[in-house]
Picture 1 (cartoon, protein in one colour):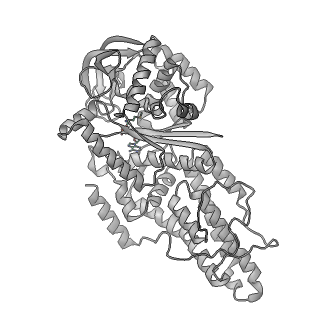
Picture 2 (cartoon, rainbow, N blue to C red):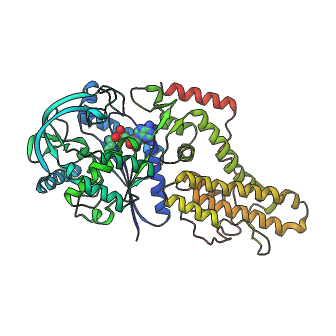
Picture 3 (cartoon, rainbow, N blue to C red):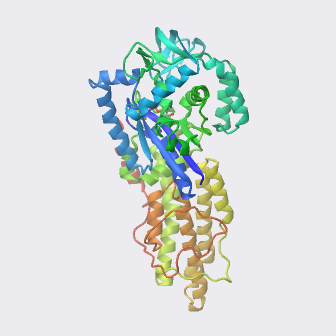
Length: 519
Ligand code: ME8
């Protein structure tokens, strides 16, 4: 059976979940749900990164122990992921023993490979990125290139990893596996970076305590990125376990562009050194900005709380917006206004109307039950769009998949408009034709419910219930499609609209509520 292992970054516990972390996690959930619908043996991992200087400092500022801080924030993550309908199979915390054991094992393997030596690190360090920078990488020789903030100068005893030794092998890997980093633009960027020359990497620190002590020298804690990256295999139990054999290498590490270097340079080289296979694809997405600024803890106005949006709209509405608005890979600017406009246009109008009018006409013209189609009348052909949707999901392009699904929805709305069942129904001799039109629209809605399920899981169930399906299931449509996807005679249920339209007054109210909440 095809296996599909997908991971998100493990998030630092110095910050609560926000729109950016929600985006990555939703996108991973969408791909996991798609692969489950395809019948693939799927494993979806997320979690939290709890060690390092940044967490130690944040805990101190809040008068907490690092573990108390982590416990509180982990609760926030778990609640948020529940609210967003995230279906991860496991949640790894780097403070768990199951993780620490595997990190120690990886350290020992690096020692055995002869790839670690003791030295002295003297240079720049950004605590917010937990990253070392060379002078040339800094802005104005003093600012972090990611955060634009002052970096620290450190000088301490440190173990180094022979990263430079793997430069050629890594470039060869990029050559042999063109999909290793997606999309292409990020691949080119990282290849250029590697070609500027890889320097050996400091992989232990001695100036603070909060981390995993190296198994070979108790004065050193393991560099937080070596610790964190190992989560992708420690969560499976480490090399050699059944779960590891089943799921490693991962198909996709989904990450934001800010952490590409760690995933596409350090992680593969650690794996080379330990003789373990590399993940198949590092899928990199862009940033959500708010009024042009990256979402960040130090800019409270950019901290959009996804939970607030879910409580006023729905988790499906937010999931849809985030995945439809920008292609995975590009940056986007978030505003409540565009969120509501897209909700009204795509969800309330296109999808909501198609469902509502189809159901109410079935009640009116077909006694409220799914009628039989006729073999002699033209239906809508969906095969091409369904194959396209599948291709887009297979290519990790959910925004294009949604565009294609919405083409089906609009096509079905046009089919109803041009066939005018309300006019035909005035003459009883047209009943077969009316039945056929309504059956075609209902059947299409069934397939739409299947296709949207990865992104809009609750809506998929609601639509299926309205189509009289008592126990909704999700399974990816295979072409050629059947024209009898739903049983004839199912009693349909009209009920209230799926996505009630948001008028101007409510729109202004919502924007005011959300803007106040994020202050
Ligand atoms: O980097 N837009 O954790 P982190 C889109 N612990 N995505 C965003 C975003 C934004 N504005 N802000 C954050 C770490 N993200 C490490 C990872 S993995 C072994 C260790 C998402 O809490 C995006 O996926 O800073 C980014 O890569 C991640 O959150 C960074 O989360």
